Image (cartoon, rainbow, N blue to C red):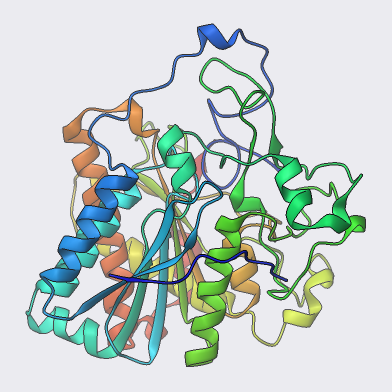
Amino acid sequence: MKRRRKIALLGGAFILGTGILTPIVDSSVVSADPLDIRKPSISGFISHDELTRTLNQIEQTSNGNVVVDVAGYSNHGREIYKATIGSGDKVVLIQSEIHGNEKVGTKALLNIIKEIGKNNSPEMRQLREELTIVAMPMVNPDATELNRRGNEMTWEEVVEQFPQLEGVAPSWNYYTYINQYWDYKSNPGFDVNRDFNPDLDYVPQPKDFPNNSSAPGWFITPESQTIRDVYKDLQDQFGTVDVFVDLHHQGEYVIDGTDDPVTLSLSGVFVPHPSTSEGEKYREYADVYNVDLSKQLNVAAYDALQQMGNSPFGNISLYPQDLDLPGTALGSFALNGSGAVLFEITGQTQSYGQKKLGQLTKAVETGVYGILNSVATDEVYELDVEDYDDIPLTDR
């Protein structure tokens, strides 16, 4: 496993449920006695130490097909890993657990890395030959260890890194509250998935704080800086990151107009189109923004899941579409030309038994393989963009 030297990275909402919009239990400010906080169990899920061991094992048994590197470090010095599989010129970046209490995607992504790396079937060989897949299965390890949404970082630490922010109000995504599950008051942190900026060379400026969810982020956390740097490195190598997939969790919902519980929701729209009046502020990205590809990738995932038949994998919905979230990784990378896909898996990881968690893990794997296969074969470009709008909506 290769390791990069640890360095200080000086890079240049609307909140709804868990996942990309608002958390359910990790949400608004609630006063609570820290002694009454009940941290949900994460028994059966993957710790950072276990991730390290698993990635080492996958790399060692992959016959050279999987290369694991340390891409960067969390605020508390934990490794943020990336695993690279394949040598094709179509680039797919997949990440999980940017919110540390959204863990099913990590298990699914590790299974995918292992399978593509070790399996020598024609399908898996084609994926390795046509694609370069970069997987980042735990991009917010400090939050993982705390089983919470936000990382572990104070505003004072931000100012130490960016002295120009001295005296500035903290960014709007800075958590300092207490509720029945988390004590951010004594252990603050940031929603890392609001810390991105479509200007990948952006350096924090005092005038841009505290800002709000419909404005870009700042790259003030080492976790977002690491993801940004991986993305930029891929741009430098390949010109374009063709596909970006982000694995999240949401609350428990039903398919619109039914009582059918949602297995997961998909989306490819995170900002208004730059060519519209609503998206005027993103006009500089209009030439590279490719929402049609994002929709085709979502259709590929949806179609793969529908082929599972009348099963728990069939209840797939479309996430809310009227979003303006440029501070998310999905919004920022979509504006940089990537086809983008959001997976919002139902429920929180502490909500279900192992059978249900196994079903959800399999659903994520199925959807991701649908994307990978369609890109490797170029079939994604033949999919009807209008089919995206036929995916049933989520009743929220």
